Amino acid sequence: MLPKLRVLQTAVVISGDHNDPESWWEWSSKKEQEDRIRRFKRKLAPQKTDKTDPLSILVVNNMLLTGFDAPVVQTMYLDSPLRDHNLLQAIARTNRPWDDP
Image (cartoon, rainbow, N blue to C red; front, side):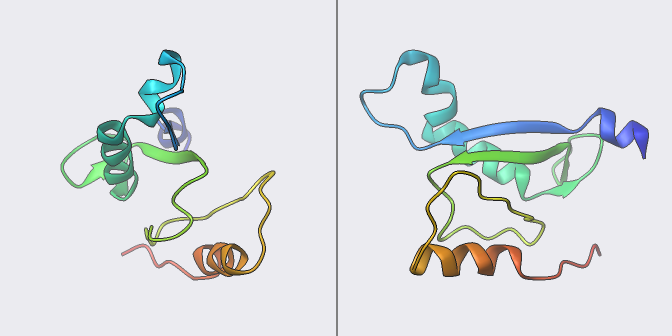
């Protein structure tokens, strides 16, 4: 278990706009976002292959609450106002079992 924990990776994905500082572009680039999301949805493994990836934590700011589905997602929403439809979406994302095949 410890070797697996040592290779775990994290990535950041944020909603960006044209006023963002250049230092944020790495995380708000649509191409980079799509790549990180695709990697996150792969089966967790210490090595990156076409079907596995060590990317295990996706830190998201202001996106992926609706229209995003990855069965492995275990989500925590911090400092985010959740009510009405957003609250229902957040509950739906975290209230489901996932069986590792």
